[in-house]
Length: 273
View (cartoon, rainbow, N blue to C red):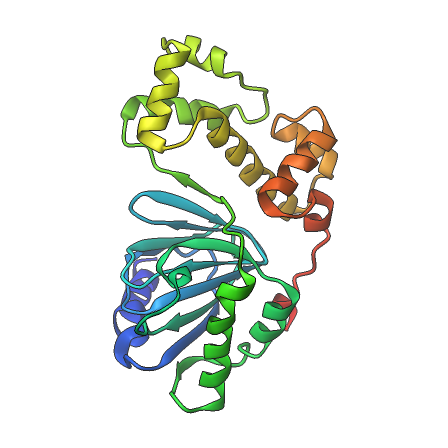
C-alpha cells in the first residue's frame, strides 16, 4: 500500500501540473486505494462510474455517486477514496483561465446528462497531456465550456465536518441509527440538550439544521445501498428509516432529481466502454 500511495503522490505532484497549458487526462480503475490529501494548480473534473467516491476537503466530505461528477477548483486541498474496487474514475484537469465563469470557482456535484455523457465517451482512450491546438484538447475544452450552461443544479451531496467534539458524538449516533426514525427532540434529550440549544449548535457549527443533516445523510446511505444492487427500493427505504416508500421516493427526487427506481436501473454506460 505504501508503494502505491507513493506513486499516487508522485503522479499528482508532477504530471498534472508539469505542462501548465495542457489539459491533463487520467482514467483509472483505482481499486480501494486512498489518494491522500493533495492539491494541484489545475481545476479537476472527476467523473465516477460503478460505485461511490468520497472526496474530502478541509471543511466537507463530498459523496460522489456513480454517473455524477464533481468539480474541484484549482488549489483546493482534497483527498479521494473510492468506496470499492469497482469504481472507475475519469479525470480531466483544466488550467485556470482569465475571467472564467463563476461556475468554475466553486466545488460542486452534478449529474451527467446524455449530452455530457456522449462528450465524455470521447475521452475514454485519452491519457496524459492534451496539447493546446490538438483535436483532443479542443474536445476537452468544449466539455469544460458547456458545464456552466448544462449544470444548473449543484446537488447537496456533501456534509460538513463538525468542529465541536460534542456534535461529533451526536453525528455518530445518527450514523449508527439510520435505520430508525430519529426525532430531534429525542436526540436533544439523549445528549442532555434543550431543543433550542442543540438547534443553535447545529447552526453555528454545521450551518444547517438537524433535519437537513439527517435527511441528506439518509439519502446518501440510500444511494450506497442502491448501488450495491442487493435490495429493492422498498427495502432500501426501510434501511434508512422510511416506512413510506412514496415519502422516500419524493425526498430522493428532491435531492437527486430522479426517482430511486430510475437511479437503480441506470446503466453504467462508460464502464463498459
